[in-house]
Amino acid sequence: MNKLYIGIAIVLLIILSGISLFIGVSTVTLDGLLSGDSKQLQTFMVSRIPRLIAIIIAGMSMSVVGLIMQQLARNKFVSPSTAGTMESATLGILISSFFFSSTSVLGRTAVSFVFALIGTMIFMKILDYAKYKDVIFVPLVGIMFGSVIGSITTFIALRYDMLQSLGAWMAGSFAGILSGRYEMLYIAVPTTIVAYLYADRFTLAGMGEHFSTNLGLNYKQVMNIGLAITALSTAVVVLTVGVIPFLGLVVPNVVTIIFGDNLKRTLPLTALAGSLFVLICDIFGRLVRYPYEIPISLVVGIVGSIIFIYLITKRGAYASKA
Amino acid sequence: MIEVRNLTKKYGSKAVVDNVSLKIAKGGITSFIGPNGAGKSTLLGMISRLIPRDAGEIYIDGQEISKVKSKDLAKKISVLKQENHINVRLTVRELVSFGRFPYSQGRLNDEDWKFVDEAIDYMDLREFEHRFLDQLSGGQRQRAFVAMVICQNTDYILLDEPLNNLDMKHSVQIMHVLRRMVNELGKTIILVVHDINFASCHSDSIVALKDGKLIRHGSVSQIIETSALREIYDMDIPIEVINGNRIGVYFS
Image 1 (cartoon, helix red, strand yellow):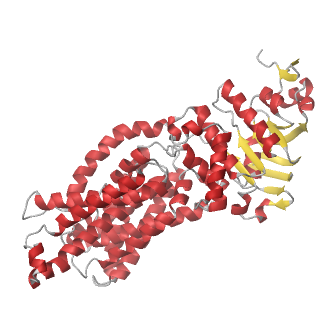
Image 2 (cartoon, each protein chain N blue to C red):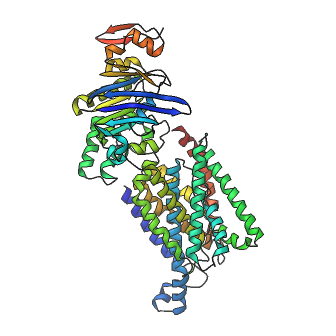
């Protein structure tokens, strides 16, 4: 059953990837590539393939990160964009730009990672102290927290005349993905693999500290590993692609509604569904106003927010029932 | 054997468990009873290392539990807390298989799956095994959690109010299963119960707590007895013997 869905998703992903590779302003055709047209080959290697890889990795890692956060926070509406993680990563990138030049990607990733980690940890601490853990209340706190960080970021950017570069990180887009400028995103591949290796532990941690301690699980350690994976993946995605709202929220929710909360089972499905979702949104964004393109953050934002509203009305009732 | 020496837990200046010393022999069912706020669940939580203690020692089979790795302890003692908001959607089979986590760390071998199958059959859950927990009734869900504990296969099993939210039929069913686990599998079961008559009908020994202090520990006939119950609950409860069971008539 599971294998069937994974199989279908992989086939779809391959077909859509093929389509994605041949969409764009400058003509790239299979014939041209095979006949060794150097201009077409260059476009293909420098822009099209990196773009496709970025789409697949960003979609996969952000969805998986959302899944982990929802499990660890024990709330279906917690995700990088509703827990201050994205905003903290953005603040980190801004701060890092004072210390590192734009070519020093490693340094900027590190600073952004640390900020995303601290931001998410603060959010989790706020949750610990919150007396009122309603399904809707928790993400609201996260969105407010994220807005506070966002305004700090805007303020700093305003003071140092950096609003324009801030805008670039805030609005996620795959248009700027070129070979040599996105490779940091590859970090999200091993973190996603580690997430899969920890899938069972995340499932248990989601059942609560007492439940996991009973089974001999080091709850705090698993929690910290989960947050580190979250922060690192978010940091590299925001740095290379930019903020993609709602992605880590809607994809895991749709998957878990159908397949349940056993991460060993749902994590690969979530990863595939995430890539597929972003790929479809990206193709749509590139075709709807051809030859111009709509940034991915906008397309995912619109589709995602519609699904989010649907989930809140449907799942809000379901999640609070238990 | 579980031995507790001078165990204390304070919240602020109030001791919720106050200098409790206790020995629980291997085998049999021991019930913790007492009024609300007596410290029953806290005591159970400390014995199972879920709640940190402020003072005292806890030995399981002669080993102080703080000196045993949590991972190894999970093969010796299991505990089921009454968590009202477990809203994780797992199937019964998935939940039960997590009982093997201390042994398998998530990679179950054929032997682990044999344990899973046996536990599912033992709790009569075969027809529900692929259902999600939130699709089950309260009684079925409780049986699923007990099946997970069976799968964990520990000598000692601690249950915090396992009859909570269960109707009479399912409560009796759970108590019968626990008895079978003692008789057939040689388990030692300790549970917190609110209803003294459940404790009376199904326990081998009863521990009575009040205001954090252990005030009685003995056999059923020593505790389910009017003067002892008066001491524990500040109530005069007449005892009737019905079919050999001592029943406290506390309703009027």
